[in-house]
Length: 253
Image (cartoon, rainbow, N blue to C red; front, side, top):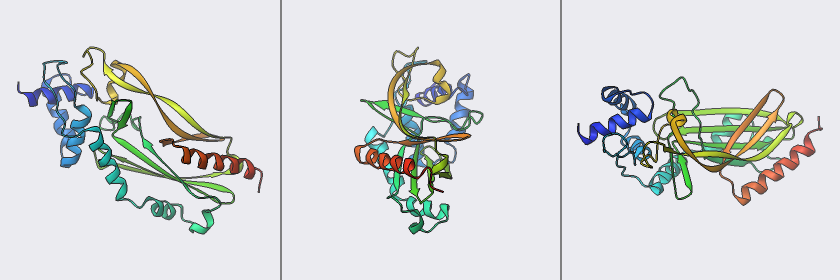
């Protein structure tokens, strides 16, 4: 068995879709088929460090953390998300300018469809920083009576994107909060620290080390909606201003 075969087997095993070398090879071929060179590099980035767990092989990555973050930044720079959001909402910008719009962005940490074995989120964490293979941007706009949201999510290991638009009447909002949530850095219990990136399907077999991420949570009767965000002072000030306006407008009809 060559180094490439070992790497293929190990990635397939981490994904929880391979029980042996043959199945592992089929899994990685299927996962990488049709992917761009950049997407293949990203897959290697998230699985780099898989070493010595089974047969002493290792997956090497061309990318460092800074390189991956630049890939995400480049993807964002090619999008005009504010205008995409306004178009999806279907209103003139003058109708949604009660306060300046707020943009939230952050990595996604959960799979969307557990039944789809290709719908998986990769993790990588080092030096107190963590990234995933899925990134979210949300624009929030404020009219006299409503909040309008547009969320765009993209995957860095595929061409998948997700878009969602929602509306919230101020009078319906029962909670508008910034939350700090626990997320887990994953290390294989049996690998003596050799696994630094793995698929979320394998989480239940892993030892977990904690770190935190932020989200905006809006609760209305019958539903709770969360938006990923990387917190900073200016953004927090804007959200507190929005929260104050929600309180003020809650009883305006």
